[in-house]
Image (cartoon, rainbow over all chains, first blue to last red; front, side, top):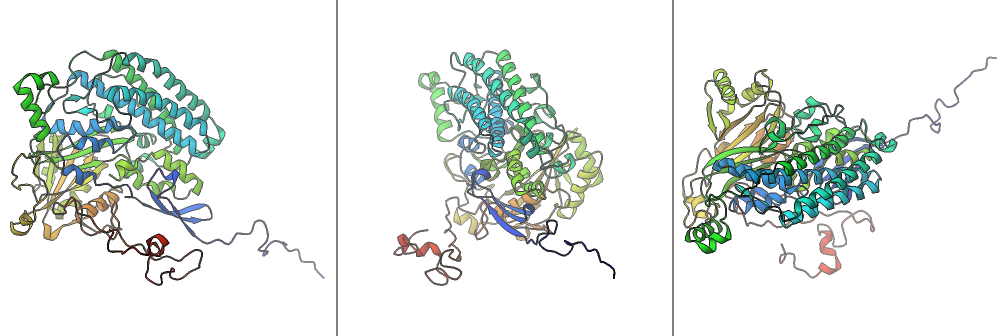
Length: 408
Length: 218
């Protein structure tokens, strides 16, 4: 009689290494969910915890930016562009105004160029701080979020003093900016910048070598440089893959050619690189702000061509030409010659493009915004596929989609 | 640099037309050539335009509409008579592709005119993945059809939306009734039609809405 040795667990469905019977499950995330940053709906198909398929649905924040712009005067479009990216509005308005200036063929004054770069870089710091803080918050590091918001508030206070509004500033003007630095503002900015840098360094020490944070972000949401270009990535998300493309360096506009700064590059193209890159960009923007303050020349903040820029109040009330120019600009708006341009600047999340068409009749004939987040969001399904559902949140954070510009 | 790029394209494809405005280089192409030219621009080593920035649609319906009063005070919107009685602007639409090369730092716009009775464009989703959403966006806003697109659905608007909002004959103040809510199984009472019976949306069975005539609100 032979004794047969059998694996006691071979066909036992209750054994520990038996495969669990599972079926696909569909889960709906958003659109109203704090981690979906407002308005994106994701229909995710899960196999256990692994994402098999994801279908993003957008448009819940669509408010007809292009249609409204086509029915407004050139200056009335300005506040709409603020609301595209409400975290870094100065970068948006500058992009739009540069498009109009390109159509007209005029240049802003030199001081205005510096002020735009100054305001724009402060906005970029705010945008990156918001993104970094949100990644921390949603991975359970609430302290990081508080530090980031403290730093952002310091800068938003400065922006409020400079422009008159915290978020929707509408500060850039054709051929210049609306207001100059108020007295004592430069010193206040110089006083708060070290604190912002200190808080950024605090975030760095809290997260960058944090075992939990690194485990949750490294190797998550990886995309290669070539594929990222194919998907239309720009900005920090593209540079995290090691592709050196920054509009400020590749095609220096405004006074960026006079600034000494570096473009940080990642190598892996994962969530961790996108986070580290943003921290480094905050430091580089900090350098640019300091250089702007040092190099800022005195002079007018807006051009004196009254066909496009409002005359000073002294001239409005003191001269007939001033009154006429003021009346024409307010009642009819500026007249932009017919033409079509595509103008691109480096927004906080990538290349921000405005495709503007004018038929020369006082209103933009067509405007389309190339929101940096739009192509990146379209690749979200590709980025999260194969990862656990818990990784979806940090990946979604790290691409920093802004609903206002993506959904227009 | 970019002028050289236009020359390059025109040498290869003689029946394209190149132009330049404010430093933006444009080539006008015919529809049959579109995929071939874009593919050439993407893959040729001298062009190397791997980044598709965006796809833009423009409706030229009111491009020459006369305006009275100050240019800005008149509406860009086409008045009803202009749309009905006047000869149509043809070609009415155009689609523009903004291409860029990261390595060679040059950009080019490929423009394609379209007649309103035949507003169809071959898709370039096989060349650029990012074209997927941009083509859906242009379809959503202008009703331009991208033949061969794997999933040509509305992107920003909801599927039940009627018309194409960025066409110039779509009135800016037009409102569309909200979509009636779909009937869904009641989680408490179990599957089946809601308490109002089959076909009655849950919203209208709510206590506060029982006496509201559904025709009075939009």
